[in-house]
Amino acid sequence: MNTTVLLPLPAPIRWAAGASGVIGLIANVFLILFFVTAQPWTDAPGDGWFGWANDVLVVVQYATLLPVILTLGRLMAGDARARGWTWIGLAAAVAVIVLQVLLVTETLPFAVQVVPLSVSAVVAMCWAGAISGAGTRTGTLPVTVTRLGRTIVIVLPIAVVAYGAGALVAGALDVPWAWAAGGIPGVVLWTLFPAWTLLLAVKQ
Image (cartoon, rainbow, N blue to C red; front, side):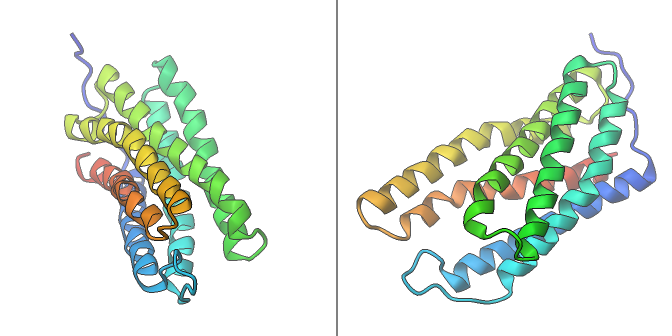
C-alpha cells in the first residue's frame, strides 16, 4: 500500500503551473478563432492575428512549464521512470519553444515547422500522462491530477486516428473541411493538457 504523503509544490512553481495552464487555455481560444475566421482548409484562406497570438502564447506556456517539469522530477526522484520522463518532458518543451520562436520570427516556415512541433507537443502530453502515473505510484500527486493525466493519454491515440482519418478523407474525396472535422478530438486534447497543468496548481 502506498503511504507516501502528498508533497505540495513550492509557491513559485504553483504560480508557474497556473500561468502555464491559463496561458495555454487562452492560446487554444486563439487557435480556435484562427480556424473559424481564417478557414485555412479553403482555397482562399483568410488572414489575421489570431494565429500569431496563439504562436506567441504557446512559447510562454511551455517556458513557464519548464520549472514545473524539473520540480516534479525532483519530487519523484526515487522513481526511475519519472526520472526518465523528466528528461523527455524537458526536451519536448524546449523543442516546442525553439520551433515556435523560429516560426514567430519567420526563420522557419510553417510547412517545415508543423510536424516536429506537433510531435514535440504530443511527447509533452505523454510526459503529463507518464508523470501522472509516477505521481500515483509515489503518492506525490492528488488523485484528480493523476486521473486527468491518464485521460490525456487515453484521448491522445483517438485524436491521432481521427485527424489521420480526416486528412485521408480530405485528400481522397476532395472534402477540404474533413481534416478540420477530424481535428476536433485534437482540440479537446490540446485543451486537456493546459487544464491538467492548471489543475496541478490549484490542487496543490
